[in-house]
Length: 577
Image 1 (cartoon, helix red, strand yellow):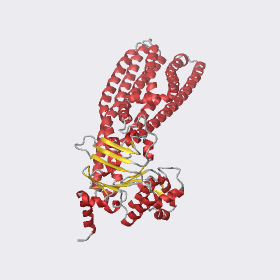
Image 2 (cartoon, rainbow, N blue to C red; image 1 turned 135 degrees about the vertical axis):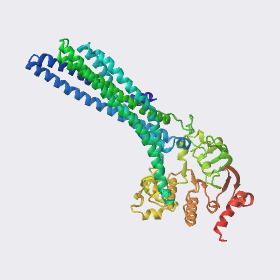
Image 3 (tube, one colour; image 1 turned 90 degrees about the vertical axis):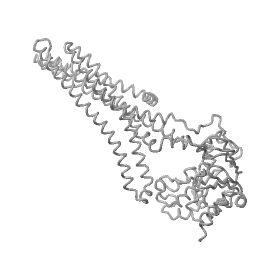
Image 4 (cartoon, rainbow, N blue to C red; image 1 turned 90 degrees about the horizontal axis):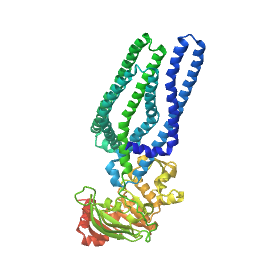
């Protein structure tokens, strides 16, 4: 999975990688040549007292060293550029894929996990790509080239290489084998920390309101301790690597000095050759060590690549139709025919056989007890979910056959929990239609009963909005969300319990303005208050996912027991005993 991901996203930057190979090869060749040149200086210059040879060879050695440094810098630059651009492309790919997900896929992965996959996991793969383009290229060249150059210097000591390299490889293999499953656990624990932190930051008001700070702190400590425990086990294995590697390296150097000294004493080897052989042994083992360090990064990056690929490979249940309808024959019309919806693994459907229609310009209200399926029902219209059975038609066409952008342009949705983005009032209102003029924004605010409080804010339309609209009251957020949907200029407006934070007077004025200013726009209204829906053209009554009544307010008061109970419960609350 890691290899496929790297090949896919590094292919556009193959020329940068080719440059890395060329300059890294030149750098390694220079590094391998330096010990031989140093041996010649000792054997032919120092030993014979030839100062001129020392100066001339030393100048060549200095020039090669400078070239080696320059090639290494250029190779590292190319590698970093390719890796950073690859990371950018992966993040773009994950973001685009997640943006196309339905609520079902987002719930499956979890928001916290998706954030981690697009940040930490991408960073792991990105770092591996950069290190691999430098260290993983140079390490085998250094090790193999070092072996060749060492054998050219002296074959008699080559048995030391045959012993040291396998011993180092066995040690590294043992350590890496223990780290692979730990890295997988570490990423899952990181998801848990991200999820807990995100929940606590999002629900900070609830936490404080119920005096749950200590309990939530304990919950975070538990998640934090879990990731620390796994990280400590990784660290315990990791810290063994370098001491063991240095032990092998130092013992090998001692062996070279010991047995090489005997050969020098016997006249079978020159002193400069001994120093060169020792340098090559160190290069060989450092090459193996560098490759080992990379193999430690590979398992964690492989886990991250697997998690990223899982997101990229996930197809949204909201599949775009191949021969999509590009024009709606009857804009504003909404019709549900025996619509049924079930969540995956659920024992029974959330909605079962719901049928109703709304003509262009009509108002259809949906009412029912908590958990009756009202939000799920209106989510089927803009195709946030696909119906499990039956059909949902917008503009005279099944929503599964309509081009998604066309469907979403024709619908304005005001969700149950209005969300505002950080920016200004104007940027939030223009979220659905960037070309909207200031006059259109003020007109939408006037309909949504938000003109007065926006005019009083410092800057008016340019007043700052905090992320999530936290610097506004609940009612103000709802009115801005309604105004945003109006600016979108849709054929259908869906209000999912969007008047709950408004007082009765503001609610009434807003509905009157909507009916008066947008007579041709179809309105689907989910509400809890009977006063909000009493003047609707039709009211759909849901009970436990089934439609138990449909008609006007007066008709339902005579024919629908469930609606009568809803009305009676609200009258009993409003009327003092």
